[in-house]
Image (cartoon, rainbow, N blue to C red; front, side, top):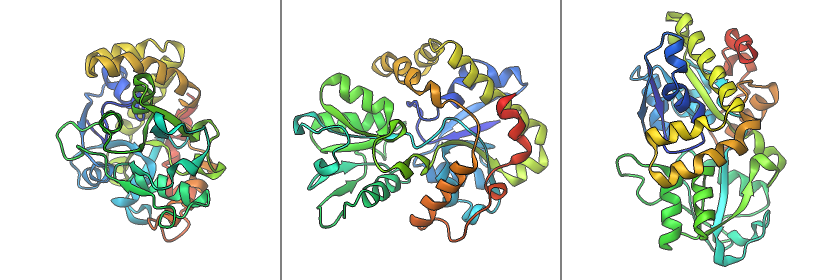
Length: 307
């Protein structure tokens, strides 16, 4: 069983990573491996093409490979809500929630992820052109083993960008190094309220896989749910995963980052989350219609979310 993931050194899709490293997939009889595909659109294309069985990635990324949700479904939330943060250079003296700091600045975000920043700024009343905001790729994104948040923190330290929109691992590294200030943390109430439901870290598969092997799909969902529960019981398990996979600095921050995320480690996909996802993806030009909840979510596995 293969799982595609667009960012390996991250808290964003951590329950799927942890399910592999802590043995929760194995307990369900699944021999699971994670394969890196960047950007996220490539991960979902690999799912569509049968290269992998599942994706752990941003939910809106499904529409890059499954237009109008044809052929694919979300199985569970790896965590709740939009999971990126806006970090700006610390010497700018930015205040939490004050988006005026982005005027005339160069902000890095990787493909697929950058859509969230664009729409968030627009919803906050900032016209990117008149405000001279440049949203640019994260330097190094073409390199093997690329990790978005880690690379963004490095670019901020190097002075090649003024800020970045990336995961909380990169944000924490920038703050601890004294080079970055968190301006927006959408999960915790910053920015336009609608931004919380732009997307979520999701666990997804194809209709084809659901039809062919529903038992495997159910086992995978159970493994994700049990991993979330285990991390809520003992967040130090995150350090065990970090030591196996991450460089030392990233291992040093992962427990604190995951600890803050624990309230969001819930596999439930709500009607409100799907409505928000629909609204965001329509505005982003990824969705034309209004996909029903059942079109987006494989509801036959929803009873497992609280099992």
